[in-house]
Length: 438
Figure (cartoon, rainbow, N blue to C red):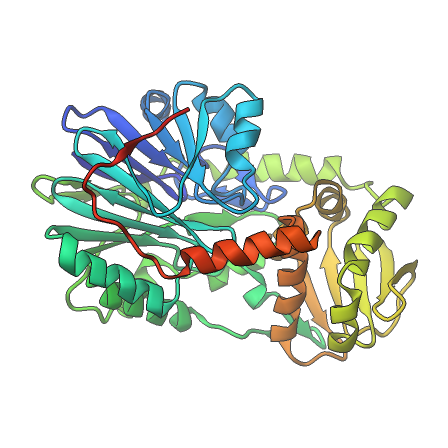
């Protein structure tokens, strides 16, 4: 059996016959987040041909760098697409509506995918999920962006102590993918985390899980838009990880590694061999930005944004009493958190978001406002507000609304119930894994 990492957050697992059985989180071509994110290393044409033959494709969560619909369309309808049983399940239902074979997995339940290969999905409160993969020689823990608590990781470690007597391979994101470096105060850069914070977290993670191998994962991007390229200097690199590695039991592997699960021989793609055409990407970015240069918000967009913000005004008002500003290309807006009204013009707000017009238009039209905090081109201007952590509350509230959790009391109750139900990570034994039914 062979385990390989490709793309961004994709693992490819081959069975004993070297047949592709499982792929995860397929972002394998093009870009994400309004042409901001691009892959460091794209699959070759030959690799893509093999990926189209995979039996199962697991999508951990809805973010487009994990659930990339152009990549899924390219993969085609041969795979069965599986996803976590989240309280507001959208992935499987949407793919089924497009005539793809797709199923949502019951949480904390083992499923058999192939001879000797079983998986278990664990949804988290933040609409992400972990995927545990059991093979004859290795136990694979795919954490992607999910960030479980220490208590949950210790519960998993306890399970592995009792039930798993094989090599442990852990994969997790390890670099910023949020507004953590996007704050500005009086035109000066403000941050609440540095590179070392991420490195310390990964060292603690693999030490808690007593992992044998760690593969840097789900952070393989380059930012190419002129308004997001600044973020490249804040990425955590493999060299950063290597310099700060303090987990003696765990071997740090390179991105784009390939592990033979029989011999545990490891190979990897060296950076000088990455399949990446910078000139072509820059041209595509330039063409895109030119095509959206004249976009402005219309009245329907303004009403949609106001409605989105009004839904949380009773929480936003005490947090941001001077309101919230928006600098949207050449348009300025002000949201009065007490009155719940969006007006045109600039005022001295608690904080302001600087966002391109096309991104804001898409975010309010399709209900993905939370994605604006991931783009790296969204800047948070700290006017009266001096606590960047309060801005996280703002994005959390709007993201919960994106997923429908705060749209109604019933939805909120179901979300809380799901979070509590899955919180303890009560992993069952692998006595008789269920088949995946579509």
